[in-house]
Image 1 (cartoon, rainbow, N blue to C red):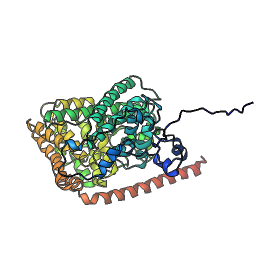
Image 2 (cartoon, rainbow, N blue to C red):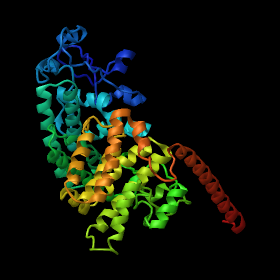
Image 3 (tube, one colour):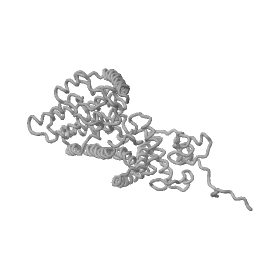
Image 4 (tube, rainbow, N blue to C red):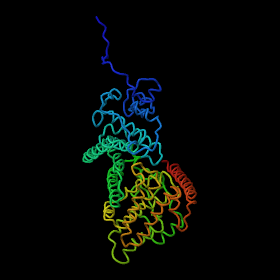
Length: 500
């Protein structure tokens, strides 16, 4: 009897694949080329990366090594990518099923491009966990959710096209973007426990899919900022579905948390002034206010809700006082209840900047500021109400101090300028004065950089010294540790005395 070999499947002869990951090449083992990580790397917890020039033709590679002569034209900057639909590429990238069907060579290339060149642009906190989420977990999650996968592919194609202009990539990025919004809309109509994390993560990427204007028209910049605020509103609603129901237990929670560290109260001189004029943030449950914005279980037992004086620049403080006094003097201000929460949301941003200067907590607070904006406020922005525009201008000017995402580019100055001209067309003197502070931040940033621009925020504040902030914060944190230790000792004392 002929000997039978079990488990053997004959295969057609094929060309040797050279598309394996860098780790497998270095270890000289066969790579199965699975995305987002091959089986060899995944089983050993190795970092799995694919060569970025995987799809470069010999002509393209040689052209990069040859120095150019003369002044390059715009046309010469365009890169001609190979035809990814050519059958000759099929042996380079093995076909496998994803949420959008079979992965094409271009899809594979763009997902690897996202991991190597794009994902770090979304990490504002510097947290290693957040970096891993964007680089590894999110791409892996996208394999099962088409709206997230299309979003990553669109973002990668757009980024690549900005770096090396290519008409095919530009067309493909628009196609991916259309599919993102179409699939995302369908997912929003049926949010489940299985797709919630992917829906939430996709919401954080939508801002990068709304491209800034290419013209210098003020109306287009005002419309663009309104579109960003509208998308942020959707993310706020999505997060609220689980905010008080264990969202902090989700793997993607680090992408939506609202603060990285608990802040000290404002400096004493600011507290005295704020209490004198009656500008304090209302007390609310943990996790529901800008003062304690993270879910309640993330705080220690000693962190209790308390009334906090607001910490705002003098011009914004004057604008706030005018809003507060309008209910007592003169005609009724119908927008008072809509504007006040936005002042409250800005205050912790200034506190973080004062105590810790340019730091990850400040960056995160800038990013999540829009999650505190209600639909009524967005309507005021749409109607170009002067005070609402000023508050947005301050937020956008402060965002200039954050390492900007590549999709924003240098558009901050254009947005702030457009808002300034819109405010200047009205007759609200306090709003015009308050706006000048935002413009100063942008101007100093362009002349002297982010550090000097951050320092300029606190010029003219009575009793507030920029250099003293970090020292005051360190002293407060030490006192907190002492208080927490005392609280722990009280618990031990109770246990010993009552036999608990």
